[in-house]
Length: 320
Image 1 (spheres, helix red, strand yellow):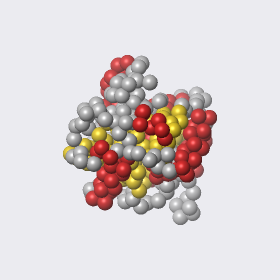
Image 2 (cartoon, helix red, strand yellow):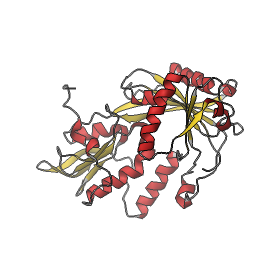
Image 3 (cartoon, one colour):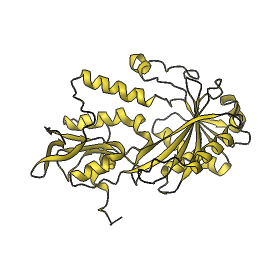
Image 4 (tube, one colour):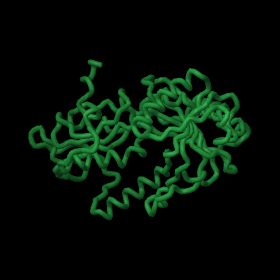
């Protein structure tokens, strides 16, 4: 495992370009019942090949010296890595251009070209673009794009906020989650939910999340959400109590009702493929999703069964 703040070994040029860090993740439980649930989840993850190392309560401060007292224990995930998402997106865009991709910014799709039921390209306000296959990777807006092709994808925005502190000495070693975060991610509630996720950055600032709520595309700042973030961070790391927050930002996660992404061809509109609905895991699952989509497009057998992610799995609107 790389040390705190150090790039992961083997990152190479790509790793340097996107600030890959193998800081590891630490999930902690506030009580025994929560820890029991975390034990079951970790066992399932280990069965799937994920490294999950139990950390008894008495050893939590060895991993994170500034953690609050009284926690029941947790799990360390040494394989948990981070990238800077804006740098990652920009770097992948550069690689796509070098491979011959044409990028048309500020030119939204307004419709699809069709040959009978088959999708044969897209329309924008400026041009028609024929294509053998069309991939809907529009993130939070993927449901709206699918509607233009006459198919339903219940991808909805799930708003989240993050606080950014003033630069500090390196006091937080891992990305640290309170175990309640797992339940919040799995919840289908539209109401505001918040559980602390705290990590340091190379610049010394500390990022504090995470909230979730379904309020459409309302981008207004929410003081109740920000206050819950601050309170959760102090609950987990009391050392942050008197630290200044320098800014907050928000975004929209592409939420699906069953918490699974949408990956693969859409039989309701042949020629249309989807890669969307990953909610907060889009960056981490992006390369694996791209591989699956590429394998399907060229006719290879995918490395992973994509049946659970099929676009047509959702009931018709009004039948759920």
